[in-house]
Image (tube, rainbow, N blue to C red; front, side):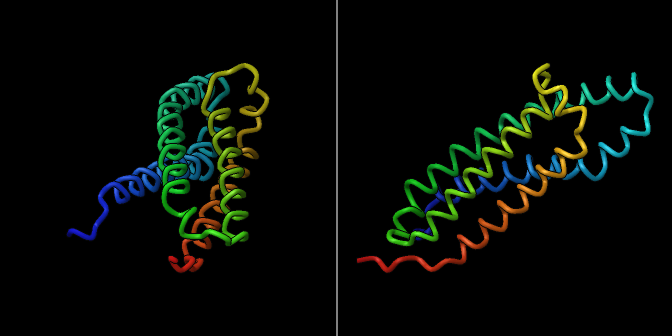
Length: 154
């Protein structure tokens, strides 16, 4: 047990749990909630979706905070040093981070109440698909990054 870095375990747990909550919520909305809501009359659907968005906004916000804090700590304090000189690693990590900001934006816009994003929410089916696709690419990039060999310590 002395070899376990419990801080890194906690940070990894926060990162994975937040990703599951936000990404899983988006997938659920795409395959179950959105199609079912389309069967409701407009007034009922709008009220129902407003309640769902209100509840899910809290999950989105907490997930974004958890992912940013844990992700940047893990990259800046741990993995960046393990991959010094590996340009591909850092390019893929940068791509993963940029895609994550896209997911954060779409998740926030879809879950929020801002009038500025009403048109985006009106076409939620498309943007949920885009968001789930981006999450899938981010998970794939994470798996590739995890599989890349570390630079030997000098």
